[in-house]
Length: 255
Image 1 (cartoon, helix red, strand yellow):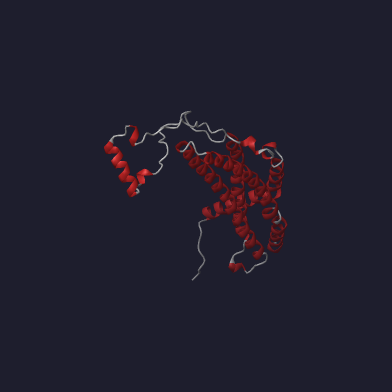
Image 2 (cartoon, helix red, strand yellow):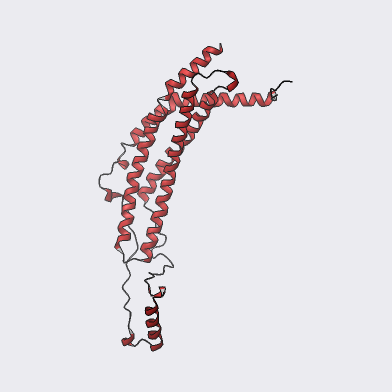
């Protein structure tokens, strides 16, 4: 009995067409797209938007005014006796109600609290580059996996090179995805700090922390762009010659 699986000819034709399409796209990426993207990112790193010397230029005004202090009266200034007695009992028992609870915020005085527009604009320029790297890496990774010979073929030339390349491409994808997580964490952290400022407007440290977070994110974005460029140099581009050798050997032995 034959153990070979029978595949419908129509399906096999579509699969072969898919393999050819992936091969064509990946070869074009390695030969043309990656070198061009390397030069584009290197030029982007020289853009004035990524070379601000005075980080004060990226600061965003926090339009939350400090309200006038409220003067509280004590029991000697006409405070009702029952309330005064209740206050003393709570103080003695250490009830949590005696702690500072901050200002109740029902609405922002100036409407919606805006994000740091300068950083938002920069993030919107960096995110497409991250997405592009992830998508193109996935295409090249699939292409390399298609080049790995089947076990029954008995041709293991270049398999170690291909498997190493696949592993490195997975690493590139993971690092690029972590850049997107970093951007999300920045927004969440900043939102929590602004909420703290609205609740505790008299605490200056919260306001200073927001500016520190903005400066840190700006520096991180420049590092991300630099890392994206370096990925095209150190993780992808050098494998072009190795993969071409494998392809050349396979085409030579198949004739």
